[in-house]
Length: 433
Image (cartoon, rainbow, N blue to C red; front, side):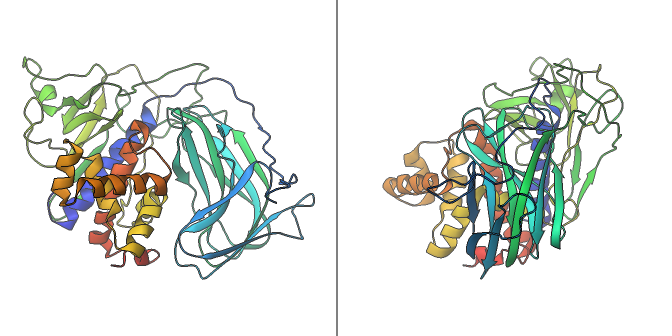
């Protein structure tokens, strides 16, 4: 990693852009799911033991005082869920559909319309979690801020394309400030017409991110066409289930006759390098060194252009999101805190280094003994820290489906410290030393 904040900022943009692009373009499959799944959407059925709407749970993270109640003026029926937050410093509170079991059924490559009637005087948004085929839940996406309203208002959010490897989702409306939020009559409906993305000429797709030591620039040419996918169609599919290592690079593209080049049947790189890592694809930590056949001396991913070798795909769009393309870091903050919030808060309150330990563990290419030595701690201390990380996050940090998000979020913590002096004002207290 280079030391300048501009290059560090570009590093995260490039890596996240790659992963978002991969998630957005790789696989679109069609089958059938009921258009309106029943999940106690009106909150009318209450669990006798917990006094919580059946099929829902009350969740949240951060520092605040929350109180839950049943509001006396529902949108319909006799029940609506009220939430009041005081002494807010960070995080959120929300009522989510159950994460016990597979969740609400979804299909990879489809989008879904989520809705809720609500009243609020605070900062609110839809939040969505996804369950992987491995059985783990993780944060997926969120909407923009919902409008404040003293009367009942129907909030709506359409999800991005469901990533491959997702079997279910959980969603709700989160309150991220002092104030009140009352919700009722939720909705979950599949979209029949699906948009996919491609940003290039009519027969290829690529992402291009350019950086220098003094500035970072993201460039793309995007066509906009909405299509309805035919039943059981697969446009492009790559599970990246190969061994970790180089998939292909610009050396292979510009030296087509070289016997030592590494080629991919699906992808080509005319700038940069593409690696497989834990069943995902990424750019490596970007640098500006021209790579050799194996990218062992550098990757040149400071300018990253990935192109599909498929030339039969036309009239298709590829959409992807860049974190902080305009210098505003709120989306990256949300990603970091949804992924590592409990660790960040624990480090802040206990003066520990769990985020740094997790980052080192995910990037290690050595034994635990050698990792402990590099961290200048005893092996038993490392084992304790890893156990505490697993407990706080309540996930398997060795699950290949989660490792990339964890690694990106851990790296982004330091990036946000450098680029904004903390978490954009809303969350600076989480990073206080």
